[in-house]
Amino acid sequence: MSFHEKSPLDAPPGRAGRKKACCQRQHQSCKVGAWKFGVPATVSTTPDHLVWAPKYRKWVLQGAVRERVRELFLEIAAHHGFEIEELEVDKDHVHVLLSFPPKYSIGQVVGC
Image (cartoon, rainbow, N blue to C red; front, side, top):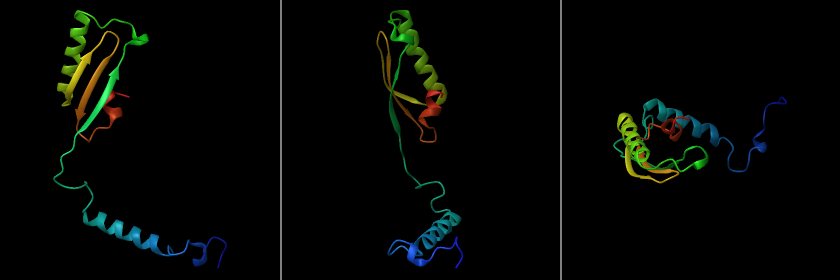
């Protein structure tokens, strides 16, 4: 036995040889395509609570600016196919409860 080969005694009790068989089963199922795209015929939503604030949280979201911010959020969501479930514009921040398809990550949605 060479230095890099492990003996069966090095494996934890009861686990010798299981990893290889388990990995082979997973690869066989991937080849068949059973789990390639997840569980078929499922519906899922991803509601996330986002808070957007202007620099230094200054009280600039008042009057006409407040209405324009609301319009912009609704336009952007409609353009990308997202659904705004709730939208509240305060003086210094905006709360958005946003649903989007699971194919997008939260980083893609907020534009990181």
